[in-house]
Length: 149
Image (cartoon, rainbow, N blue to C red; front, side, top):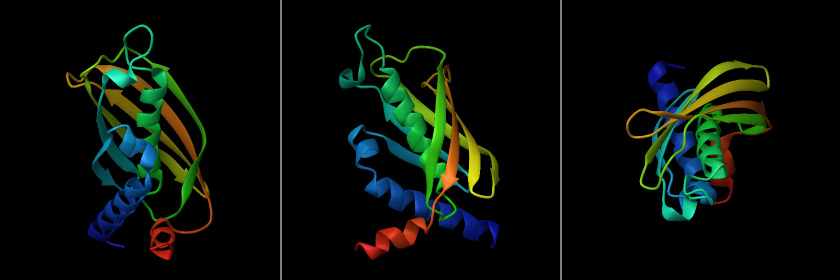
């Protein structure tokens, strides 16, 4: 497969998966870019995302990182799910912050992969670091969608 073909496959996989992802869309996430084993998502922190201390809820940050992770690990047209994830909260995010989650594959071998996600705000300030371990299940990403159309 050429590099161009791999990029196009990653784009199509992420686009179709993101279209089906009601949770990410409901939270206002945007798919910014994708490449084989990598994805970048954006989201603006709204008032509904704030916790009791007035900063962005950790679960919202986790969801943003997890969605970037999902787009990256499914970019090869091989249905993949999370086996485990962890997050470190570095700094608070505030209402109105434009967050970006950049996910990059660290390792992929056999049925498992390891991915790192970095969440930053609009000033490039580090907000959170996320690590995810993926597991490849049976079937492709694209065919699953076309089977239901």
